[in-house]
Image 1 (cartoon, protein in one colour):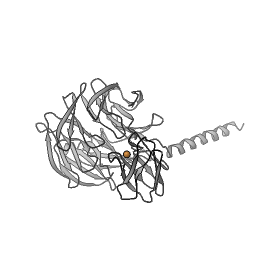
Image 2 (cartoon, rainbow, N blue to C red):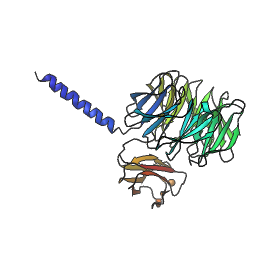
Image 3 (cartoon, protein in one colour):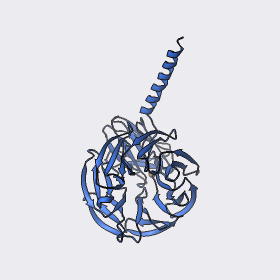
Image 4 (cartoon, rainbow, N blue to C red):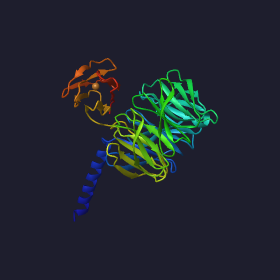
Length: 408
Ligand SMILES: [Cu+2]
């Protein structure tokens, strides 16, 4: 006779445990904009399933996230706003009026500015990620998508004005156009490789990825693909570069050092976009034609499929696991893993050299690092204050990492 209340207690206990687990979810979440039903699907990357569906303004298009993973920005193609999702609650915290038909979004590496391609008004808008206010604009004809150089100094904008197709280069300090790279066809999407040494971009009607040297703004290579390549990216930590190829429904893997194609992996129908997990080894590909997301292991080529909403276009994965406690970074294969880490003020971060070669640590804020960290050795630093702290390997400066310190 006490069974019902006993059951209720068990149920309540389960519910509390579930809620507690949700509040401290360690895995990063992937956010998928569903163009046809005006929602964003939220995927728990550890569980591999959708855990929330967030209504947003019509025509979710461009997406960006702050480096700490706290906010996700979604532009609405069929409206004039950017929605700001608070990833702690997975609700829209506010909308920002930016002008008609906003397309691509990009975040500066310091997490301070969101750059919005306001296609319908021929300008970029700069949104302060602290106040969520527009703090500047610059005229760019028909801005579609935006790539920010990893040093945060320049943005390359795909400008789709008929007869005047170009990559428009904007200085982010002065917020002025500094030059244009004229193109024969409409640019689709530009993306910098994670080391900033190449800009990969695609053009409508060209079955190849263009590789541009940003030092000279010259195209130095082409990577032939199947029909309709859309986005090419080389994510931090990724063993290969990746191209989403819409026609055959595949991703093409390439070697970023030679620009040679390696292999193709079949995904869903009409794939659209790609984003990587924080370690760069797993990628999430939206399939606009099959209403799902392919999760691809870049080493093995193994794929999994997660059903999402109608017409998934953009996807962005949090670059860090929100609420990860403590800080351990492994140095292996000439890379920091994770390359981005969130800790709380007062936490220590420990780097362990798990590699066969000596490395070191140089902090860009001038804190004492170590010139040489031999294999098997470790080094710790305590972070007292909130902020974003960049560092590099003292021996191999192309090895980069970031510690984000923020209060819970
Ligand atoms: Cu090193």
